[in-house]
Image (cartoon, rainbow, N blue to C red; front, side, top):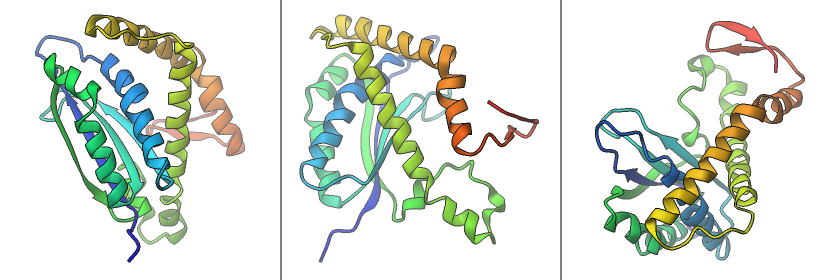
Length: 213
């Protein structure tokens, strides 16, 4: 019997002491190393149709988390899980008290199960809108692929080093450059061109007003 694709979630809970800013450089480090290598590892056996990364750091019971979601088989998910748990990056973060927890679990049976909670509640009863949820994972996969490419071009073949202090400084710089791109050019480079795909129609922004990019 063929192994069915499902959504699998791999989550790294980053240590976040009180009265300190979240160590967001660790997200970039994990994306550039473990996520990049895991996707390549999975593709060698079976193409991973859809995947995305997610980052969050509200001050709540979950705190600072970095996660990878993959729409793949149980075999590939187990392969990725073993790769993460036995990686030098996982060991280094744990030994330096930077990783509070790592876990993975099934996160949905259907493509649309990973769709953002912000998808309209009024979709109920509108088949075309409900079916649209199945398209969103392709959008976010493209965004995440671009994010990894941005990290790669910012690195420009430079090495992060092996010492945790060197690695921290290296990825803090990468994060700074990513922020500069997002804040300085994101409105046109990202939002404007996405708007163009949808025909430059006005967009309802956070329930307040309509605007164009």
